[in-house]
Amino acid sequence: MGARHGLVLGGGHAGMLTATVLARHLDEVTVIERDRLPEAPEDRTGLPQGRHTHALSGGGVAALDGLLPGVVEELVDAGARRMRNPEDVLIHTPAGWLPRYDRMETFLSVSRRLLDWKIRGRVLGNPRVTVRQATDVIGLTGDAGRVTGARLRSRETKAFEDLAADLVVDATGRGSHAPKWLGGIGISQVREELVDPGLVYVTKVFRALPGAERSFPTVMISSDPASETPSAGALLLPVEDGRWMLTVTCRRGVTPPSDDAAFHEFVRGLKNPLLDTIIDRAEPLSRLYRYDLTDNRRRHYDRLRPAPEGFVAIGDAHCSFNPVYGHGMTVATFGALALHGVLAQQGIAPSTARLAQKAVARATNPVWSMARRYDIRFRGTRGTNVTVLDRAVQAYDRRLQRAAMDSREIVAAQISVFELTGSPSRLLAPQILRQAMRRPRGTGLAEPPLTEHERAVLGLG
Ligand SMILES: Cc1cc2nc3c(=O)[nH]c(=O)nc-3n(C[C@H](O)[C@H](O)[C@H](O)COP(=O)(O)OP(=O)(O)OC[C@H]3O[C@@H](n4cnc5c(N)ncnc54)[C@H](O)[C@@H]3O)c2cc1C
Image (cartoon, rainbow, N blue to C red; front, side):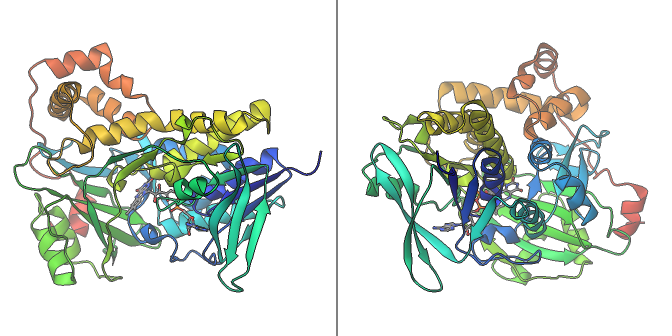
């Protein structure tokens, strides 16, 4: 048998982690990336979302460390922040501020450029992995029964090439053309599901205020699904190099700010003035960045009949999420682990791709259900019907949310589900059900639970 070759289309988060997995099971791995990948932590054209706030959930941190042991520590050494949730998170809900209980989970707050650079450095240090940069994937090769490789075009020489592989993994992200590429070799009808909240992200970077460069909480102002008028939210993430990234999120019907004055006006108009107080005194470090492609979109490659051999889709190419939940990178990491599980069991065999795609789908399903469940609470969401069961679940969620205001146990369950460390069934545990069903108090704290130091940093005396 000749050397086994794996081909990874796309060198983003899912692509690099997939390359690391394939390198454990195959002899050679080639990553195809349209960008020239920066030698330093820098933004790049092929990853426009990289300029926006990104947090890696608690479940994602553990999964990433499982795939690349020690990389999380390297990131923290380089300035990424470990955020204890909810101890380091100020959450303003429609019912008020959540109490700041002791740590229940820990997520990572880090710029995408630093995260990707560290991961890339580790993955490309593996001698089995090579990357073909400035190269577009423009199609797949093979036939209706089997994908045998990909068709490439160099951005620099404009030369075309067909590259053969034993396994092709599509990790070209949210804009993947795989349904069209598969159609080109006779595999058609990839069924797609869409839940479109019509959300727009607008982000600006600030220098942390003096005294807060190394430690300051994340601040989250959540949108109100019960609001009659379209609702806005915001997220401030402290990242490396003493910078704060502030994103405002505009649900359908909210006009996104298009210049600095409008951005400040927008922040001033949020349901709570804390973020206005914060940025009023902070030095801006960037212009505004806007991002509009935020729908939840799942492609059912796992339901193709017959399932083509030799092809798996992973990460955003398989399923992308409304970014407001911060789950995309974690699901991509879970997907890479699922692929590893199948390859470890049976290596490359006729059923590998089919089983791997099913495993990736299984790892994705609970997160998809959660995103759908949250997004259909908002009036402007399109693309899916709200069922009677959905309404019952929404009513339960509302009770939970109110009861959480004075229940540490409910907050712990919610946070573990949200951080993707615990199963959603935790929210239905008997003691949680009991607490949700009793008459809930329903109000949070009226003032943000800032420490004395944080108040001093903000000049609040
Ligand atoms: C505004 C925003 C904020 C987000 N915030 C969070 C967050 O807080 N937490 C979180 O977990 N997730 C977040 N996400 C989701 C996260 O960005 C994605 O889930 C993650 O990047 C998926 O990784 P991926 O490798 O599948 O895709 P990407 O990271 O997008 O990588 C795709 C790669 O493929 C390359 N490529 C594309 N087409 C081709 C082609 N034809 N040929 C060659 N190369 C190609 C691209 O250049 C890119 O390098 C956010 C998303 C957005 C839009």
